Amino acid sequence: MNKPILGGLWFFIAFWGVGVIVLVMSSFQLDSYKLVVLKVPLPHDYPLQDILNMICVMSLEVLLFYIVIRPITYKHSWRRALMAIVIAIFMILCFGIFLMHAPPYMGWHWLWLVSVTFALFILFLISTIQTLQLMLSRRSDTKD
Image (cartoon, rainbow, N blue to C red; front, side):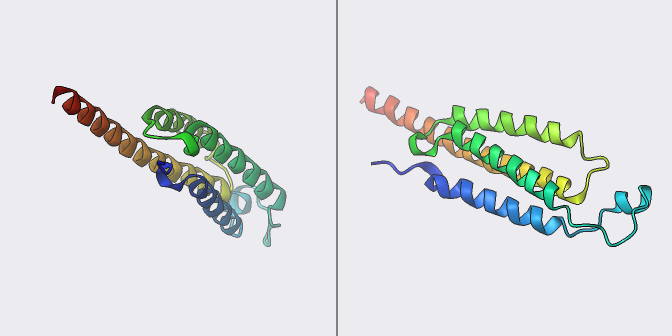
């Protein structure tokens, strides 16, 4: 029985966990736009509601990637990885539009999306190479 590539569910949980930690840690950073432009004096309130909203958004993103990739039945499916990359690039572009005056946690979420896209690209490369190797081995078996 073949094991799913990258171990399945733990990979998505790990990326989600890292994203949550990054969001929580980045929410302690100073929001310079709020301080300089909006002239809100220090100390700023902790953006708990905004962080919870971003964690929900991140959870939905991870769930979407999990649904697209389906690691239990993956088996060299480079098309699923390519679809996940396209979705991730679309999300990067959509969230990138809002980064101009965004608080620090929005920028860190965007960087998290970029790292997820990079990981999906590596998954795509591995899947493509494995599929090509499988096709070449089948072709050589039929010639013999």
